[in-house]
Amino acid sequence: MTRKCIAAWSALVSALMLGSFQAAGQGSSTTGFVNFPFSVDGMERTAGLYVPPDYDSSNEWPLIVFLHGGGGNGNNDGNALTERFYRQGLVQTIRNHPERFPALVAFPRCPEGRIWSPVPADPVQSDWRLNVHGREPAPDAEAHVTAVIDGIIADYAVDRDRVVITGYSMGGEGSIRYAALHPERIAAVASAAGSAVIVPEDAPVLARMGVWMFQGETDHLSTAPLARRMVAAIRASGGNPRYTEYAGVGHGMANRVYEDAEVIAWMLDQRRGPM
Image (cartoon, rainbow, N blue to C red; front, side, top):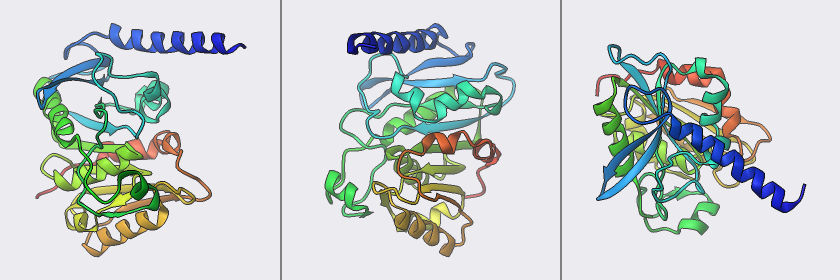
């Protein structure tokens, strides 16, 4: 197949994906993948939102928030899900196994030049992250995560005690940090390949919620030693985090995490405890 044919086929696949996504329409009466518009920091943004086919506003539903990895950043174009999302774990899992998701699932997009959640200056971080971000804080999109959660709660029937955040790579890093900063919103966190940076001081807060960390043993971007250190800090603070380390696996392990039915069931089983 020529390079032109490959490009044309890729464009067609993207158009079909985005077309089906847009055709789902707007508003809480539509199911499937829909666009969810919201405003934050004077910016008009669009998140992706999965609404289960049997959604009924007379019942309260769990909400899972997925934070994508680096390279998924982008400014608003009205289409919340791009082809990249369909290759990055949770979206594809929903398409493969919709029966596993009796829940609303949100897919916000981090703006260009930002990371998901704030980290302090000179955090504990891998050599790779130090080379990329240095020791000073990077601009973050924490307010965007809060805005999409609050917007969905306002428009849909959400069980506020069953809001779970998860993410891969930069999203894994951002999810565990956001959970530590917002225990009033988050019941649990599932962080995949997110230990390029850790904040051990977050451990006492994380110890009071469900935590499951996933890490590849040979990952040189987010590293197993940092993941183990964070898990140990949470345990030392009285928590009971789960930790899965994949032997011989590097950074690209999002599909492995989210295709595991036990992981999805665990997220749906989590409830926010007393603060």
